[in-house]
Image (cartoon, rainbow, N blue to C red; front, side, top):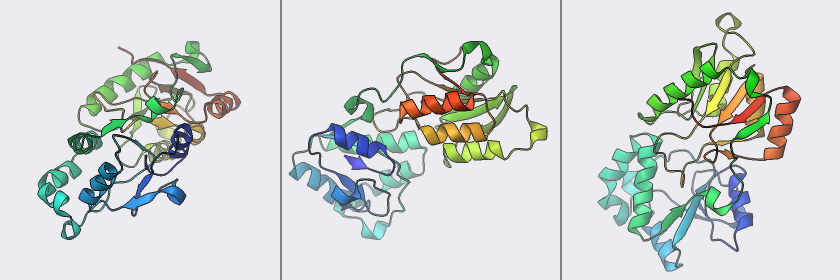
Length: 263
């Protein structure tokens, strides 16, 4: 397990039998008490460690920001790939993660997704709170059209649309910042209580290493932003602490709907 922050690394850890855990220096790691820490500048040592232990599969889970690399501290492995590494670092998340996957495959190590390790992290299509009758389908269609276009540019997994107006698109700042921005938007620019928060996987996103995730805190943030509905894709968005998410949606009168993209 390559562990970042948050609750998901712990969930994956509990599902496996004595997995080897790795954290990276300067990054959050919710399994820090049992992790061996590596340095992003020393990728050669990292892969040597995995190969010496006979590791042939890896699951990358948890929150992790982009590292600040120091080329003067690169080992030989990283030096020979420095141009490719820095080129990937200047691209969007999908491009960077695809390069990371290529490094694992080069070392004969197969990345696997958290959803392949832990059952029922995602949801099947259905209405988990609220009703389809009250859903503003036109707003969802607009949201899906925009997300499809921005995903081709490796931008965003989430969007908020309200009465046809786009109130925000998720960028590198993340979902919390997006919903905070919507919350703070002037009431004069809004039709409060009808908006939709839509979170989807990007087109051709590799879900083994980057799967959209929401949890109870997301539900609270959607409520604070005075929105009406949460829409996610079946089987392709992780929902943490699902029972609590459903309970909160019922308590806060939010619709929680799992459905494919609107065409």
